[in-house]
Length: 460
Image (cartoon, rainbow, N blue to C red; front, top):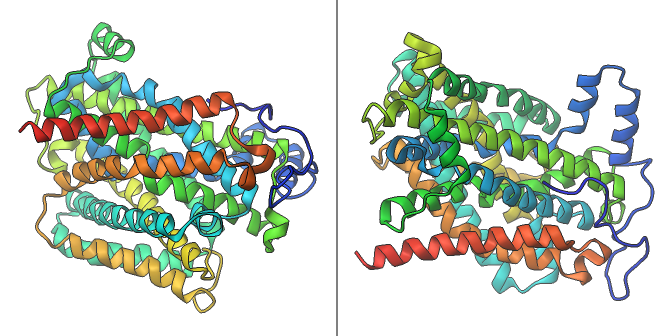
């Protein structure tokens, strides 16, 4: 978890040689005004919800259909053996997302904007290209998953649902407001709690669950390492890096900070709220991730159903909770998670491309004011639709999308950590000891898992 007390803030002054003033002392404006609003709210729960924003949304989108498919595959194929990855990855994913959020808050720009201003185009364009490719593939897999969920509910063939689903999501992004989208996304996270309840009702072997949670069981075979890379790729995902930073900028824009100089810098209070938001979002994502593995291990794996080939197969994990309505529960979860994640996938790709080329961007911009931004969203959506007609099994697509993310994330993490420790960019807000330990640890773990998988593939 990330520090809440602003311990990493550093002194309140302009660093020598730093391009911006990156420590903002005032807390009466920007996110500080959020604090004032929160204090005036008499209802305790509403006070909490007013603080939770981009971090909670990012955490919820982390459990997208690709994540659900990956965790279900892990539990069904390997039983409880990968449960340890949940507590292991939580501090790493929280640290990574906090770093991305802090870059957005301090610089007033998204990650691609920072790369464009401070680094070579030889770094910028490959990073953005890798993100766009991964996000388009991921969006396609998630759109297909929504169609599969609709098939479970209504019997409509998935192939017939793909285009209407994609166009509905695209219309929501183009003609809806950012605030409407963000508020809707918060509530869609609730559909994933069915996995937590089903985990308890499945009556797992709690002794085996505890051992698998605290004692890692790692084998260096192809199946295990492939699942491990997929888990890391869908948990510490490239699209979340760019989305988190860009949404911190969107939050500031919504507060009236339309000029870059107004957004540059972050107060101690802003960083504390940011850390709480990120920690809450990542914890929620991690709990769901853990219980999907636990539930599928206790149901599908124990029943000998170790190979998930369809949404209907995966839905059987919710039978302890839903009984004959297990398919309905799974379908609702899949549809809700997909509608949450696809706009974030295509939106984060559009943010990155727009910042890389200096275009006008933002979900609060009108379509005619940010044609290229919305054009990039449309292109990513259409690319995802095209992939859905290649004949790939939807459940396989969800899993292998996570594996692809597992290979793209490590070099992007390396760039992000270099940015977060660059005093010319971050001034006094460079990473502290613990954030660096966790951030570099996440980077090393991602590189190690990907390298180990490549070695096993090379050995045949």
